[in-house]
Length: 616
Image (cartoon, rainbow, N blue to C red; front, side):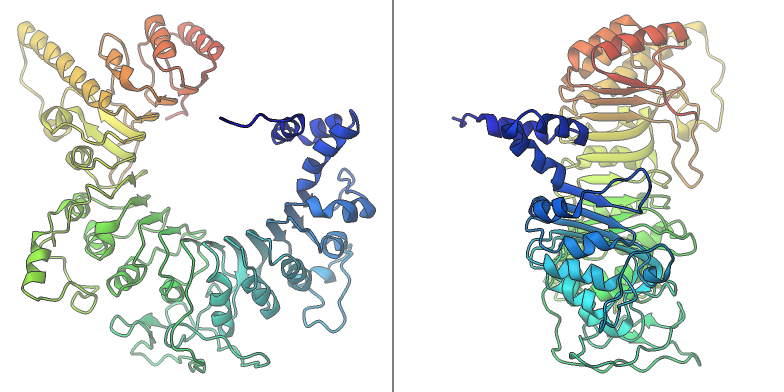
């Protein structure tokens, strides 16, 4: 039996959902209410650029209530928060942004130089001061500096000393190559690293990295940083997994001196998100020893860089990231063919892959053939004592031969997102739906209704999110090159009756997805020329079979991107009564604007927000 809440507990629970102005009004009722609601005012503070409309709390009040601060955001160069907020006992989230290299030299600033500090003319000192004072409580740290600035050693050491830090976000903060080992120590204790931008030279850590990674230099050593290396000045050696010079006349910098130990310290990093801060040809090696990484996200901020697919696969073959389960490539994968993705799926990543998100790619049926393979050949190789496939016996430029079967992914792959654009055909989509019972989210292109009718029943009963284009064109795609011969009236009637039965079978397949809560029926074609096609889609009427979807008890969001449906009052009332949890609907109910408006108003009265689809 739950314990009854007191008046004080109820006030605090209500205060979590109030705006600052409402909280202030409640705090003025009496002394008891003031004690209950005033802490919410100080839980989250933001200091930005000073303007005439922004009012900051008095220094005395800031000092008196700083122990209540849990979230602190400082933008720009203000002396008050840096000097006053040094003892926030409950501070867990800290966000710092500004032009760190030379902020104090700009006119109109109030930052005071610190005598005896090597970074006394920048904000790095004040940022380091805030981090040092809250090393025991910080859980999330975000640092955004001017593009091209380099983080100081003192700040890196302060980050490395945070005992509870879970999430670290770095924006446009470069790391000097000589401090790569110290940077490793700083990130080894976090679980999530989001690194956006990489500074003016766009080389990240760059340079030569000995053994496992560049070791941290002893205190006091000031070894000079190596000269800049061009983006194509070094490459990963597949045999030794170290940086090696290309067979050209280029000048490669001398390697950094190696300091023991010979193996890296353990890392807690589980999620790595990169936004063009790493040099694709080199800096991936910095994270290869993070054994606990399970999720890698890649999002480029510049269009002239690409996802390093070949190097990524080589490192997987050599044992990097043994727990990696999720890959998300939001851009930079346009140039890679389906055969190149096949080699990636043949790596040890294939059998344990749980989530695959690749946008604007050429992933096709061959990649999924590898994922669906049975794995008999690999079992036989192990029985015969033949070594498994590695980067040493598979060249990055080798032509892909017969697909190497793998253990089926029926019990692992749960999230697939290949929109927009992919070469996955209709038959492969049907195979995905009929062979992956663990699937929870699927976003793909066009699926012909004939492949559904002639295919196996769907087994993905755990599916919660489905985004798909169910093409109900009478002329299936694979037979659309020729026109059928002229038919008689009886043949046309039989064909329409057969089509109605087939469409009802499609609804029966959809009704098997009993846990579905978000369904999007789009009209994108998929493929290399991903466009919006004006094709016939599923008829969402009770006459066609909408009533079979009464099994969708968890439906909360429905979207149909066609020009319009032929819905009326029966369909709208049925959805309101059958799907009581639905809160969002996007689409055109009827070709008649007045009917659409009346149906939309009726849905809004029942707390369902209706939105018009975006123009195609």
